[in-house]
Length: 126
Image 1 (cartoon, rainbow, N blue to C red):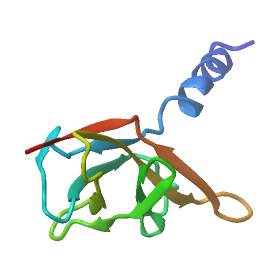
Image 2: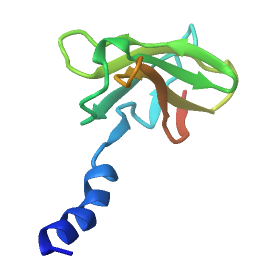
Image 3: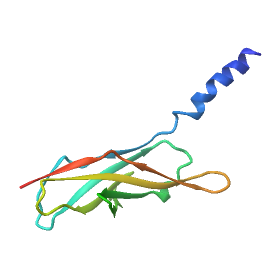
Image 4: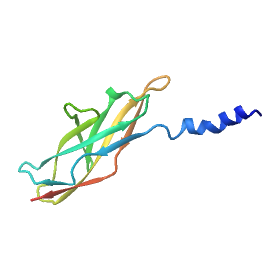
């Protein structure tokens, strides 16, 4: 076997795995002052180097318990999203996650995928 063939076989896993990165970055402060309407702004940034991803297909949501709240693009920014979400009226904390659903190019048709963030906690201070 030629050395070129050996090197190409050994480099194949490097080309196929570990190159694509999709991540969600939480931009929400850890604390928020309690609001009269109990609505709180949460923000996230989507980071991806996946070439097959269809950016116009991104559907970000905030997940609180089993409820999902749609997010909107933050004006004048790139890959940043925000949503006003309800917090419990009498609680000092609530947990939330971000979920980004998207399409990526595949053969013969585009496929769906999603990225779920870790759980974050927002402390509500009086």
